[in-house]
Image (cartoon, rainbow, N blue to C red):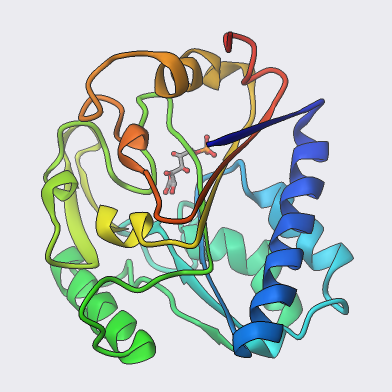
Amino acid sequence: MNVRVFDDKQELAEAAARDFAERARTAIQGSSRFTVALAGGSTPEATYEALASEYAGELDWSRVHVFFGDERSVPPDDEDSNYRMANEALLSRVSPGSVHRMRGELPPEEAAEGYEKELRDFFGALDGPPEFDLVLLGIGGDGHTASLFPNTGALDVTDRWAAANPVPKLDTTRITLTLPVLNAARAVNFLVAGDDKAETLAEILQGNASPREYPSKLVEPAGELNWMVDREAARNLR
Ligand code: 6PG
């Protein structure tokens, strides 16, 4: 596990964009493609903006294939849509080779089944979960990541790569990649910023609460696990 602390959100965003670009270049050189699952929420928006403004011409985006870690049960133009945020900040400005949107406008079970098929069609019917070159994740104040919320059903899904996950406390069902996919990644970068994440980050990295209470603890990828955090979020780390 690798923890890097940055002075502020903008420095974090620029470092995360640079890391994304370096991994993409290496993957494209090695296998002619780069597969990435984007995080939702608000933290990664600055990273996506930095990618669009500083790396639009630096990468062969036609070789970049974009997936999502999770999606809310809303249409793609909804203000809560993770796709909308990523499309406005990045995807509409760089023309990736393919963009695989979780269809939040559909009933969640149908959307998850459709995404499962889309993953299998793209990665091939491997005997194990797809191995993303990079998965970007955030953490919620309750320790969730993607839409793997504390004590919810998707935490136990091991035979599917995408799941519809009822989240009672939000009175909604989300669509999320499952832990086998997150843990098959060649690299997972958690992007965490802001004072309001300090307590949760310290618990995830150094506390002994149950991982089912803090599902971010369940992300233990086969590849690299990188925590890219700003000074405010790192405030409580020993
Ligand atoms: C989502 C995200 C979620 C996010 C955290 C942090 O759909 O909300 O995928 O896992 O990373 O909730 O969100 P913020 O970056 O807005 O704090």
